[in-house]
Image 1 (tube, rainbow, N blue to C red):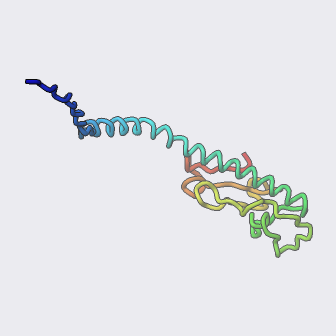
Image 2 (image 1 turned 60 degrees about the horizontal axis):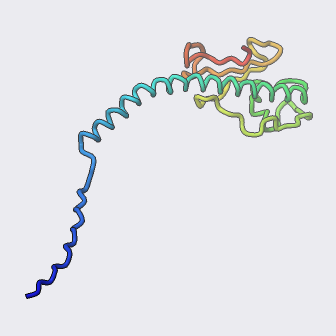
Image 3 (image 1 turned 180 degrees about the vertical axis):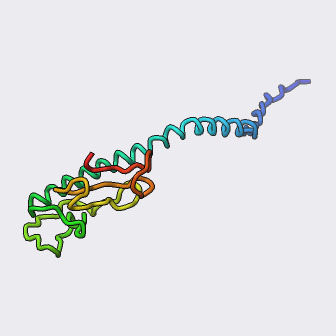
Length: 154
């Protein structure tokens, strides 16, 4: 009697277990992210006020330069009634025949808090020129911190 060898057994591939994150692991990751955010966020938001103040100062300088160019062409600064709009469109009042604008590439910007800049000519502080300022975050004269006025002549 002849015995025939059995065919080699095929090994069954191990069943892969599905691996997923447990609820505890997810909660730990969320807690770590929350702790990091609570440490970083105050430092980031602390500089937002400083950035707005710096932006306002830069825009005041840009507007003052445009106002000086306007004065060089017309011989005077725009009146308070004409306002900063005279830098973009030729004023129709007080004939300015020598207007060679526009003196700004775009419309007159609002301050970083979304309110128009205050322009007076002749100025209260600069009687021979103009006053240009932003009232800051609160939109009212005076204040300190983010609410402080940003003055174009300082």
